[in-house]
Image (cartoon, rainbow, N blue to C red):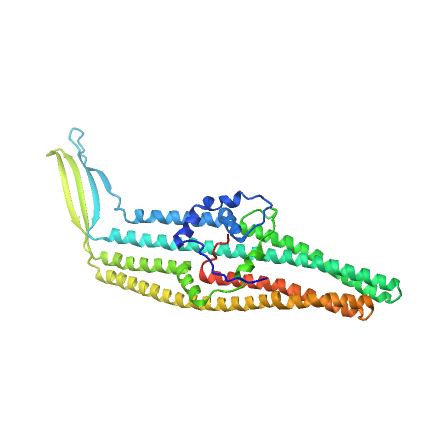
Length: 429
């Protein structure tokens, strides 16, 4: 198999597009839903199915929608107070009762409402980042289940071929025994090898069913739903060669949801500083009312008040606390950038190692092992090689084939970890 250079295309044009995928999943998965039930499943279509069916997507969408309502809540004025009052009720029933009704409203003399809105809007970015993080986690789970199912099915097909080859060995040993050129021990030894492979084949079928259940779970489907073939080989052909480090680092700084969350936390911390500074300004209170007294009759009332923010120690502490939180957010972002750079570099090197290991099987080990099998069978048929030599050769071939399947899965898992470090799985058309 010839490896082609892989440059992961963007999963979305921006993190906002990923959030739009959370909010409007039905539009993104309509094409996948229209496919026949027995059509092969690509990794891209598996991602689309999971975006539609996984309940976590609806949770993220609801959380983002709730956060979008918060700015209007925190920036609103305090509720007004309407106060009907009986100011004086004479004991003499013939005398008139003094009554009044007032309407009171408070107004901040600073831009504290604007700053609170800015802080709440920063929280929207945080929850959108959390939603993108949930998308990334679900994609990782789907990809792991996708490749694990591909491995289990490939291993089952490999064991079926091994069982068929062992059956040929049994027939060949039986013919040589009938001709008197081989002992019964050869027949029994070949039959024992065939029985061992049959047992492994039965166990492999159970492992395939287990992998199918996990794949359905990752997609958000019922565990008993039928699973068509998965196109794992098509993906492996595109990830056999890793991208370079600068491109991976640039993609990570653009795509990682954690960086968007840290940016939102930084904006909120700076907005909280402005909120706490606005606390130094007083509040204006206006009260309007109407009164009806037995002496003066009906009239109107007006009261204007102002709060006195005299407890400066509390206000100063609030500002210092807000500054400390902003400094913490900035330091946390710096630490996160270093962690992400290290994670990208480490996962990229692991991906390169897994790719080299995978290519070694594809280009060297498997062809050599396959070429050794036919001469061994011919030599045993001609009587120049004992059965143990044939079994050793066949086991060597089977071992290399099984290791090749595991190398494919190791490559896929290394790619999944690298994509998780970059924050982008790309799109597979």
